[in-house]
Image 1 (spheres, rainbow, N blue to C red):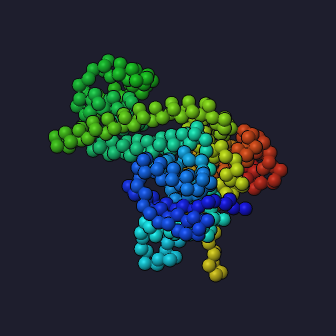
Image 2 (cartoon, one colour):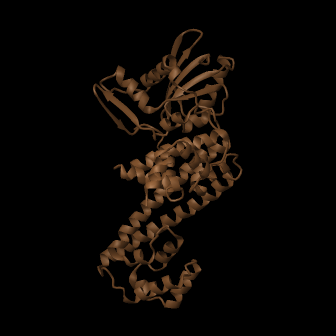
Length: 417
């Protein structure tokens, strides 16, 4: 049975001013008014609601599940939040406005209609504890920093190819402090060729690059290296841009290391972290991301299929007449899907059956990402069961279950040379 609320509230949020539509259950009347996005206005508004409805439970519907408005409302225990997927609101709006017109007050009314007439299809958002929510934010922010690191290193690679390509051969991975310090000190081939071999060796050793064969190769190639171009315009402009990119890369690398320290300290005190750390190939990064993905509320997903659909890993079946086809899910939390997809790809290198299953999918003609999604589908079901039972993953037990079920996967493994 659905919970009874004293009032239903829909908020179409905006950066500065929200449109509010309130339905009073006792009077059956709707009210519409604007609400400014300031801490003082929000606090005064919530206080007036508490007084007006004597602290009874109120349902609040909004498009987002994160942001300044949600952060402000989370601190009030009598407000029950119902986040709505923006795509759901857009489709609902289009049903009544085929001309695709949009207005904040009318969107607030549509949100209230969804909450009032279709609440059986909605689920209230019960946020995790503060520790888990902190971890969720940290791992997402860290992933954005990784994307920034990739973007900067790609730009750096492009500029080095244009005037100093030898660096790419000496240092296969540009995302290191070693490369940042090297380019800051010797931004051109001419500059590094003026340095003495002893100075370069001392520099490499100070940055923990102590493999003799690698350093000797670098020095040997440096002696015979020829500049790609001597055009002053290219050299001067590229050198300046490389200096800027190196500074950005150094900052991002420092930030990632700082995030890693905070995430590690938080994970060591989290009750479920050890459960995910036992997964093959999880490591500190994916163990933290999976801990954040599942959270601590074990009643959130009654079955693994609910999580599969939410994460966008479960395929979608479409039918029209005598035709039917399967496609991937368009609308889902992108970071959640990314976490499961990236972990499944990493598990191929660490799990015996995961590698075999991936190869089996590729032999069926599936592309890399489709095969990884199929593997993620299996991993989510496994991890969900471990999470529900609080039992760590054991590959021997899982392979035994495959044997008992006469899984085609074991037959495929047996057929491989």
